[in-house]
Image 1 (cartoon, helix red, strand yellow):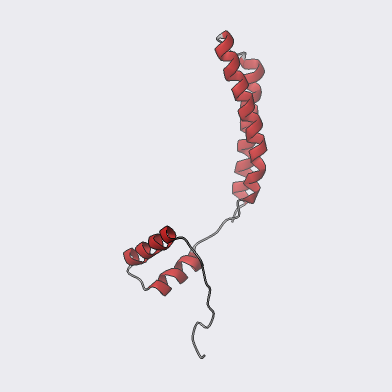
Image 2 (image 1 turned 90 degrees about the vertical axis):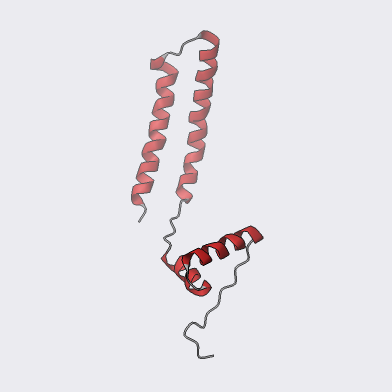
Length: 106
């Protein structure tokens, strides 16, 4: 086997994934191998695992907003300097963490 590309990768996919790839290959005008190699080697992949750490914080902020909405429905107003300010501060903290993470990505 004196081939230019001796390595082989096998990938399993659903019928719909396969049809989507075939369609994209046809639209590209490339040969299948050329398209797949280009798609796999030139596509930049970013690790987003750290974003998962924000989910619990988002849940807490969402809970605060639910409580504020409940109170607003009960009494007709919300004290801005109390609960709403705290909830907005929580959203700001999550946003700052997300921005810091995204800035560190290559």
